[in-house]
Amino acid sequence: MVVKKFGGTSVKDDIAILRVIDICKSEKLNSVVVVSAFSGVTNSLVELFESAKANNTTRASTIIEELRSRHIMTAQKLKCSEETIELINTTLTQLHLILDALVIIREFTQRSNAVFLATGEILSSLIIADAFFQSGIIAKHIDSRELIYTEEKFVDAEVDILKTREITQKQISKAFSQSNIKICVCGGFIASTLSGQTSTLGRGGSDYTAALIAEACKAERLEIWTDVDGILTSDPRKVPNTKLIKEISYDEAAELAFYGAKVLHPKTIYPAVEAEIPVFVLNSFNPKNTGTKIIPHTIWKNRIKAIAFRENVTVINVSSSRMLGTYGFLANVFDVFKKHQIPIDLVATSEVSISMTVDNGPLLDAAIKELEKFSNVEIFLEKAIISAVGDGIRNESGIAARFFGALTGINISMISFGASEVNLSIIVDSVDIKKAVNMLHTEFFTDDIDNEIFVNLGQQ
Image (tube, rainbow, N blue to C red; front, side, top):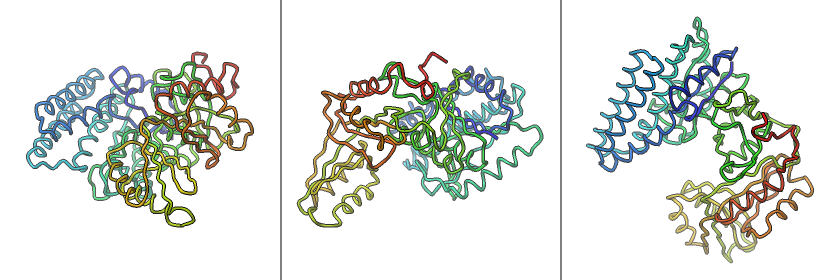
C-alpha cells in the first residue's frame, strides 16, 4: 500500500483534481489518498469564524455562499453525483445554522472553531472520492475523524498515537477488503477527540495525517504531492538558482521543516521515522519529476544540503547577577515559557545571562512581565534565524570557516553550533535576511556542485 497526500494547490479546482486522478491511475498498489481543502478555503473559513465572532453576519453569510458556489461548481465540472451535490449543500447549510446559533449565544470557543476549520477537508475529500468514481476508479471515502484521535483539545491538538494506529489499521484494512476498492480518500488535518468532538491538527496538518496513516498501515512509501519539484537548497522566492536536493535524511528534513522550509509540516517526519517508511516530495504539476527522497540515513554526509531561514523572530536576553554560581535560575526561566506555552528555538548562555529566540505571539508580553520579576530582560524584535542544514557538518573541518567567511558585512547577534550534528544556526537582523541567505547560497551551491546530490532546476 502507498499513501499519497495532495496539498491545497494540487486540488485547487477541477483541472488540478483531474491531474491528481491521472497520477493515481498509474499506481499499481492500493492507495490511500489524503487531500487538503481546496487552495484558499481554510483562510476563508478562518475569516468566516472571525466575521461571525465580530457579529458581521452579512460578511459571514457571503463567505458561506461563496464556498457553496465554488464547491458545487467544481463538483459539477467533475460530473459528481447529485448525492455529492446534496452533501455539499447540507454541510454548508448546517454550518450556517451553527453560525447563527453561535452569534446568538456568543459561544466562540476552540471547539466551535474546529467545526468551522474542518469543513474544507470534509468537502474536498467528498468531491474527490466521487471524482475518482466518475473517472472509472472505485474509491471509498473515509472521514478522517473516524481514523485520527486526539486529546481533548480542539485546535492544534496532540494525537493519541496508540488509538489512532489501532483504529486506522482496522478501518483501512476493512476498506481494501471490499471488492474492487483500490483507493481510499480521506481529508487531512481533521480528527476527533476521544469524546467524539471534531478537532484539528493545525495548519499544514494534512501531511501529518498522511504520515500517521502510512505508519499505522505499514505503507511501502509516503508521497507528499505539492506545487514545487521537491525540497530545494533554499527558498526560490529569495534566492535565484536554487537546486533540487535528490535525497536527504529524516533528520535533515525535520530541521529544514522546523527552520522554515514550507514543503513539509514538521510533524510529518516522525511517524515515518518510527516505521522507516521512505518519504517522497513530488510536484503534482510536474509528475515526471523525480522529486526528493527522504530516508532514515543518507550516504551523503559532512556537507551543507540547504540554507533555511525563519523570519519574525524575537530575541530575548535574560540576565541576573543572582545567576552567577547558583542553580535553579535556568529552570525558573524555562518554567515561565512552559507556563505560557511559548516554544524556545535557540538558546545561548553565559555566566550571568541567557539569550533565547521565540516566535512573535500574543502570549509573549505576559511571559516577559513574569521574567522581569526576577531578572533584567531585553527584547530585540525584527530578527531572523538562518540555518545551514546537513548531516555531520559539526564534525567537518572548514565548514564553519566558510560559513562565517561568506557573511562579510552581516551583523550576527547569536550563534548556535554544536548542539546538533545537522545544523549551524545564526541570528541576523530581518533586513539582512535576503542578502545573507544569498551570500551563503552562493558560497555552498555553485554551478559545479555534486550532481549526484543536487539537480539544477530545469535540467530534469
